[in-house]
Image (cartoon, rainbow, N blue to C red; front, side, top):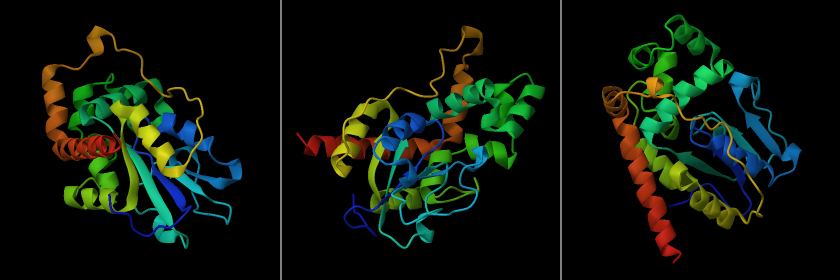
Length: 239
């Protein structure tokens, strides 16, 4: 991938798309830096409400779309992220909201009123819901905060130009290995974080619900397949 706006030892911006194994990746990345070198931008949890980078900042990580932070930097930078099968990502976030309501108190409260109806979750036109159910990965990569008309081509262009590594969740070890090679990171143990347990049979989505999620996330599916083809090509080049 073409790289732009970067030179040796740039600030690393980790675009953590929710429910793409970003929490697991974060634990590994944090071990590569001193505590004062990492800026966390998780506004829903009270981190990063004000963008106060310091001269010590070497890594920025959080639930923020592309462009949120690099426009405020005066130093070279590069990005990494992970993409996930869109159907799996949407379902994973739904069940995570049920297990961990503080992830989004507003959505969790609305869903609790309706006995955690997956059809309601998928059918809501509330922008807070759409930000989680409708082409979320494309929107993040395109740098869009609104779920309206996600721009797939802009997403691909940003990932190609500004990201050193675009990993794939179901190729996590290969993706992490590529990041270690790219940045000269040391080996460090990691454990999977925020992994949902298997769902009881009664809670598993129907084929109709799965098809509905796929239709709602057609752009994310295209982006995911594009990202997977890219990482497979890069791995092949290393053989």
